[in-house]
Image (cartoon, rainbow, N blue to C red; front, side, top):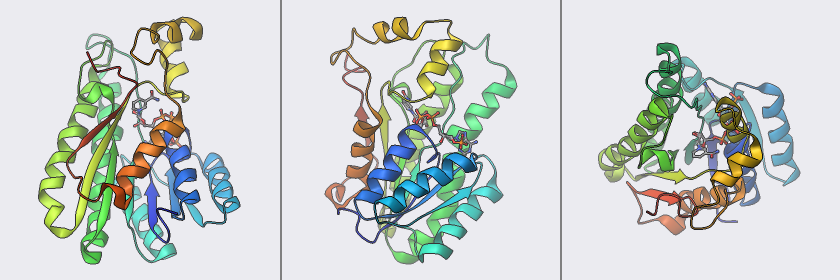
Length: 253
Ligand code: NAP
Protein backbone atom coordinates (compact mmCIF):
# COMPACT_ATOMS: atom_id res chain seq x y z
CA UNK A 1 0.00 0.00 0.00
CA UNK A 2 2.59 2.51 -1.15
CA UNK A 3 -0.02 5.23 -1.79
CA UNK A 4 -2.25 4.63 1.22
CA UNK A 5 -4.65 7.57 1.73
CA UNK A 6 -3.08 9.59 -1.11
CA UNK A 7 -5.32 11.33 -3.63
CA UNK A 8 -4.35 11.08 -7.30
CA UNK A 9 -5.71 12.70 -10.44
CA UNK A 10 -4.94 10.96 -13.74
CA UNK A 11 -5.63 12.61 -17.10
CA UNK A 12 -6.44 10.22 -19.93
CA UNK A 13 -7.35 7.63 -17.30
CA UNK A 14 -9.97 6.10 -19.59
CA UNK A 15 -7.58 3.95 -21.66
CA UNK A 16 -4.11 2.42 -22.02
CA UNK A 17 -1.34 3.61 -19.70
CA UNK A 18 -3.65 5.98 -17.79
CA UNK A 19 -6.16 3.22 -17.02
CA UNK A 20 -3.45 0.76 -15.91
CA UNK A 21 -1.92 3.43 -13.66
CA UNK A 22 -5.30 4.30 -12.14
CA UNK A 23 -5.85 0.63 -11.26
CA UNK A 24 -2.32 0.17 -9.84
CA UNK A 25 -2.64 3.36 -7.77
CA UNK A 26 -5.99 2.11 -6.42
CA UNK A 27 -4.44 -1.27 -5.51
CA UNK A 28 -1.73 0.67 -3.66
CA UNK A 29 -4.37 2.49 -1.57
CA UNK A 30 -4.88 5.77 -3.45
CA UNK A 31 -8.21 7.44 -4.12
CA UNK A 32 -8.21 8.19 -7.83
CA UNK A 33 -9.91 10.84 -9.95
CA UNK A 34 -9.98 9.62 -13.54
CA UNK A 35 -10.39 12.19 -16.29
CA UNK A 36 -10.88 12.03 -20.03
CA UNK A 37 -13.61 12.79 -22.54
CA UNK A 38 -15.23 9.34 -22.76
CA UNK A 39 -17.71 8.98 -19.89
CA UNK A 40 -18.54 5.34 -20.58
CA UNK A 41 -14.92 4.19 -20.37
CA UNK A 42 -14.34 6.51 -17.40
CA UNK A 43 -17.23 4.96 -15.47
CA UNK A 44 -15.88 1.46 -16.22
CA UNK A 45 -12.45 2.37 -14.80
CA UNK A 46 -14.03 3.85 -11.67
CA UNK A 47 -16.06 0.64 -11.19
CA UNK A 48 -12.80 -1.39 -11.31
CA UNK A 49 -11.17 1.00 -8.80
CA UNK A 50 -14.06 0.37 -6.42
CA UNK A 51 -13.65 -3.41 -6.87
CA UNK A 52 -10.18 -2.99 -5.32
CA UNK A 53 -11.87 -1.46 -2.26
CA UNK A 54 -10.63 2.03 -3.04
CA UNK A 55 -12.59 5.12 -4.04
CA UNK A 56 -12.70 6.89 -7.38
CA UNK A 57 -14.56 9.46 -9.44
CA UNK A 58 -14.72 10.26 -13.13
CA UNK A 59 -14.56 13.88 -14.26
CA UNK A 60 -15.23 14.50 -17.93
CA UNK A 61 -12.51 16.94 -18.98
CA UNK A 62 -10.62 17.91 -22.12
CA UNK A 63 -7.08 18.84 -21.01
CA UNK A 64 -6.75 21.41 -23.78
CA UNK A 65 -9.58 23.48 -22.23
CA UNK A 66 -8.59 25.59 -19.21
CA UNK A 67 -12.07 25.55 -17.62
CA UNK A 68 -12.17 21.73 -17.82
CA UNK A 69 -8.77 21.49 -16.10
CA UNK A 70 -9.91 23.81 -13.30
CA UNK A 71 -13.09 21.76 -12.83
CA UNK A 72 -11.16 18.47 -12.78
CA UNK A 73 -8.96 19.71 -9.93
CA UNK A 74 -11.87 21.37 -8.05
CA UNK A 75 -14.03 18.23 -8.23
CA UNK A 76 -11.14 16.05 -7.05
CA UNK A 77 -10.45 18.27 -4.04
CA UNK A 78 -14.19 18.52 -3.29
CA UNK A 79 -14.56 14.72 -3.38
CA UNK A 80 -11.41 13.70 -1.51
CA UNK A 81 -10.26 16.81 0.41
CA UNK A 82 -6.78 17.15 -1.13
CA UNK A 83 -4.61 16.43 -4.17
CA UNK A 84 -1.31 14.60 -3.69
CA UNK A 85 -0.44 13.24 -7.14
CA UNK A 86 -1.13 14.54 -10.63
CA UNK A 87 -0.32 12.21 -13.54
CA UNK A 88 -0.41 14.24 -16.76
CA UNK A 89 -0.92 11.35 -19.14
CA UNK A 90 -3.51 12.38 -21.77
CA UNK A 91 -2.00 12.40 -25.23
CA UNK A 92 -2.60 12.09 -28.96
CA UNK A 93 -0.29 11.07 -31.79
CA UNK A 94 -0.65 11.39 -35.56
CA UNK A 95 2.29 9.97 -37.55
CA UNK A 96 3.14 12.79 -39.92
CA UNK A 97 6.06 14.69 -41.43
CA UNK A 98 6.01 18.49 -41.50
CA UNK A 99 4.65 18.27 -45.05
CA UNK A 100 1.79 15.98 -44.03
CA UNK A 101 0.81 17.59 -40.71
CA UNK A 102 -1.95 20.18 -41.09
CA UNK A 103 -2.05 23.25 -38.87
CA UNK A 104 -5.13 21.82 -37.12
CA UNK A 105 -3.33 18.50 -36.40
CA UNK A 106 -0.24 20.38 -35.18
CA UNK A 107 -2.40 22.48 -32.85
CA UNK A 108 -4.26 19.44 -31.50
CA UNK A 109 -1.09 17.51 -30.60
CA UNK A 110 0.55 20.57 -29.02
CA UNK A 111 -2.68 21.55 -27.22
CA UNK A 112 -3.32 18.11 -25.71
CA UNK A 113 0.23 16.86 -25.06
CA UNK A 114 2.01 20.09 -24.10
CA UNK A 115 -0.53 22.80 -23.24
CA UNK A 116 -2.72 20.25 -21.45
CA UNK A 117 0.20 19.30 -19.19
CA UNK A 118 0.83 22.99 -18.47
CA UNK A 119 -2.86 23.79 -17.79
CA UNK A 120 -3.45 20.82 -15.49
CA UNK A 121 -0.25 21.54 -13.54
CA UNK A 122 -1.15 25.23 -13.23
CA UNK A 123 -4.57 24.27 -11.81
CA UNK A 124 -3.18 21.62 -9.42
CA UNK A 125 -0.27 23.65 -8.02
CA UNK A 126 -2.24 25.96 -5.66
CA UNK A 127 -3.70 22.96 -3.75
CA UNK A 128 -0.26 21.29 -3.60
CA UNK A 129 1.49 24.50 -2.47
CA UNK A 130 -1.13 24.98 0.28
CA UNK A 131 -0.41 21.40 1.47
CA UNK A 132 3.37 22.03 1.16
CA UNK A 133 3.60 18.76 -0.74
CA UNK A 134 2.69 17.35 -4.11
CA UNK A 135 3.94 15.12 -6.87
CA UNK A 136 3.54 15.69 -10.59
CA UNK A 137 4.44 12.96 -13.08
CA UNK A 138 4.27 13.88 -16.76
CA UNK A 139 4.01 11.35 -19.56
CA UNK A 140 6.52 12.31 -22.24
CA UNK A 141 7.94 9.65 -24.60
CA UNK A 142 11.18 8.18 -25.89
CA UNK A 143 10.39 10.57 -28.73
CA UNK A 144 10.68 13.42 -26.22
CA UNK A 145 14.44 12.80 -25.99
CA UNK A 146 15.29 11.53 -29.49
CA UNK A 147 13.63 12.27 -32.82
CA UNK A 148 11.33 9.83 -34.59
CA UNK A 149 10.15 9.48 -38.17
CA UNK A 150 6.77 10.93 -39.08
CA UNK A 151 6.32 12.54 -35.67
CA UNK A 152 7.00 16.23 -36.16
CA UNK A 153 4.31 17.65 -33.85
CA UNK A 154 4.44 14.72 -31.42
CA UNK A 155 8.23 15.05 -30.93
CA UNK A 156 7.88 18.83 -30.53
CA UNK A 157 5.19 18.35 -27.86
CA UNK A 158 6.96 15.55 -25.97
CA UNK A 159 10.36 17.28 -26.05
CA UNK A 160 8.57 20.28 -24.58
CA UNK A 161 7.15 18.11 -21.81
CA UNK A 162 10.66 16.97 -20.78
CA UNK A 163 11.96 20.53 -20.42
CA UNK A 164 8.74 21.83 -18.84
CA UNK A 165 9.19 19.05 -16.27
CA UNK A 166 12.69 20.30 -15.45
CA UNK A 167 11.62 23.98 -15.38
CA UNK A 168 8.74 23.22 -12.99
CA UNK A 169 10.98 21.05 -10.79
CA UNK A 170 13.30 24.06 -10.36
CA UNK A 171 10.44 26.48 -9.65
CA UNK A 172 8.50 24.35 -7.16
CA UNK A 173 11.04 22.16 -5.32
CA UNK A 174 11.25 24.58 -2.40
CA UNK A 175 7.45 24.36 -2.06
CA UNK A 176 7.68 20.61 -1.43
CA UNK A 177 6.64 19.61 -4.92
CA UNK A 178 8.48 17.03 -7.02
CA UNK A 179 8.03 17.07 -10.80
CA UNK A 180 9.33 14.20 -12.95
CA UNK A 181 8.43 12.61 -16.26
CA UNK A 182 8.50 9.17 -17.77
CA UNK A 183 9.62 8.49 -21.32
CA UNK A 184 7.99 5.25 -22.47
CA UNK A 185 8.94 3.41 -25.62
CA UNK A 186 6.32 1.61 -27.69
CA UNK A 187 3.63 0.23 -25.39
CA UNK A 188 0.67 -1.93 -26.33
CA UNK A 189 -2.29 0.49 -26.16
CA UNK A 190 -4.91 1.59 -28.72
CA UNK A 191 -2.42 4.30 -29.80
CA UNK A 192 -0.12 1.79 -31.55
CA UNK A 193 -2.60 -0.03 -33.84
CA UNK A 194 -3.87 3.41 -34.85
CA UNK A 195 -0.27 4.43 -35.65
CA UNK A 196 0.21 1.21 -37.68
CA UNK A 197 -3.04 1.83 -39.57
CA UNK A 198 -2.15 5.44 -40.40
CA UNK A 199 1.26 4.27 -41.68
CA UNK A 200 -0.45 1.63 -43.84
CA UNK A 201 1.28 -1.23 -41.97
CA UNK A 202 -0.16 -4.57 -40.88
CA UNK A 203 0.03 -5.06 -37.10
CA UNK A 204 2.40 -8.08 -37.50
CA UNK A 205 4.75 -6.00 -39.67
CA UNK A 206 4.60 -3.12 -37.21
CA UNK A 207 5.57 -5.44 -34.33
CA UNK A 208 8.35 -7.02 -36.44
CA UNK A 209 9.79 -3.51 -36.85
CA UNK A 210 10.08 -3.25 -33.05
CA UNK A 211 12.04 -6.52 -32.74
CA UNK A 212 15.47 -5.01 -33.48
CA UNK A 213 15.55 -3.23 -30.10
CA UNK A 214 17.58 -4.50 -27.12
CA UNK A 215 14.62 -6.23 -25.42
CA UNK A 216 13.11 -7.14 -28.83
CA UNK A 217 9.50 -6.37 -27.90
CA UNK A 218 7.05 -3.60 -27.08
CA UNK A 219 6.09 -2.86 -23.47
CA UNK A 220 2.96 -3.51 -21.48
CA UNK A 221 0.86 -0.85 -19.79
CA UNK A 222 1.61 -2.48 -16.43
CA UNK A 223 5.37 -2.00 -16.96
CA UNK A 224 4.83 1.73 -17.46
CA UNK A 225 2.37 2.01 -14.56
CA UNK A 226 4.99 0.54 -12.20
CA UNK A 227 7.46 3.26 -13.20
CA UNK A 228 4.82 5.94 -12.63
CA UNK A 229 4.05 4.41 -9.23
CA UNK A 230 7.75 4.58 -8.33
CA UNK A 231 7.94 8.30 -9.20
CA UNK A 232 4.65 8.99 -7.39
CA UNK A 233 5.71 7.18 -4.21
CA UNK A 234 8.07 8.05 -1.37
CA UNK A 235 10.59 5.63 -2.94
CA UNK A 236 11.48 8.51 -5.30
CA UNK A 237 11.68 11.11 -2.51
CA UNK A 238 15.03 12.53 -3.76
CA UNK A 239 14.00 12.64 -7.43
CA UNK A 240 12.81 15.76 -9.18
CA UNK A 241 13.41 17.14 -12.67
CA UNK A 242 14.18 13.63 -13.97
CA UNK A 243 13.17 12.01 -17.24
CA UNK A 244 12.88 8.29 -16.52
CA UNK A 245 13.25 6.24 -19.70
CA UNK A 246 11.19 3.02 -19.75
CA UNK A 247 11.59 1.75 -23.29
CA UNK A 248 13.20 -1.69 -23.44
CA UNK A 249 16.40 0.00 -24.60
CA UNK A 250 14.79 1.61 -27.65
CA UNK A 251 16.73 4.87 -27.20
CA UNK A 252 19.93 3.24 -25.89
CA UNK A 253 21.89 3.58 -29.13
P1 NAP B 1 -4.49 5.68 -25.43
O1 NAP B 1 -4.84 4.33 -24.93
O2 NAP B 1 -4.95 6.12 -26.76
O3 NAP B 1 -4.92 6.74 -24.32
C1 NAP B 1 -4.91 8.12 -24.56
C2 NAP B 1 -5.68 8.78 -23.45
O4 NAP B 1 -5.61 10.20 -23.63
C3 NAP B 1 -7.14 8.36 -23.42
O5 NAP B 1 -7.52 8.05 -22.10
C4 NAP B 1 -7.87 9.62 -23.91
O6 NAP B 1 -9.09 9.75 -23.20
C5 NAP B 1 -6.92 10.72 -23.46
N1 NAP B 1 -7.09 11.95 -24.24
C6 NAP B 1 -6.81 12.15 -25.55
N2 NAP B 1 -7.12 13.41 -25.88
C7 NAP B 1 -7.59 14.01 -24.75
C8 NAP B 1 -8.05 15.32 -24.45
N3 NAP B 1 -8.13 16.28 -25.36
N4 NAP B 1 -8.44 15.58 -23.17
C9 NAP B 1 -8.38 14.60 -22.22
N5 NAP B 1 -7.97 13.37 -22.46
C10 NAP B 1 -7.57 13.08 -23.71
O7 NAP B 1 -2.90 5.84 -25.50
P2 NAP B 1 -1.72 5.57 -24.45
O8 NAP B 1 -0.67 4.91 -25.23
O9 NAP B 1 -2.19 4.99 -23.18
O10 NAP B 1 -1.24 7.08 -24.22
C11 NAP B 1 -1.09 7.66 -22.94
C12 NAP B 1 0.12 8.57 -22.96
O11 NAP B 1 1.30 7.78 -23.16
C13 NAP B 1 0.12 9.62 -24.07
O12 NAP B 1 0.55 10.86 -23.57
C14 NAP B 1 1.13 9.06 -25.05
O13 NAP B 1 1.71 10.06 -25.85
C15 NAP B 1 2.11 8.41 -24.11
N6 NAP B 1 2.98 7.42 -24.75
C16 NAP B 1 2.45 6.30 -25.30
C17 NAP B 1 3.29 5.39 -25.90
C18 NAP B 1 2.77 4.12 -26.54
O14 NAP B 1 3.53 3.44 -27.23
N7 NAP B 1 1.54 3.75 -26.34
C19 NAP B 1 4.67 5.63 -25.95
C20 NAP B 1 5.17 6.79 -25.38
C21 NAP B 1 4.32 7.68 -24.77
P3 NAP B 1 -10.52 10.10 -23.88
O15 NAP B 1 -10.58 9.39 -25.18
O16 NAP B 1 -11.50 9.61 -22.85
O17 NAP B 1 -10.54 11.58 -23.99
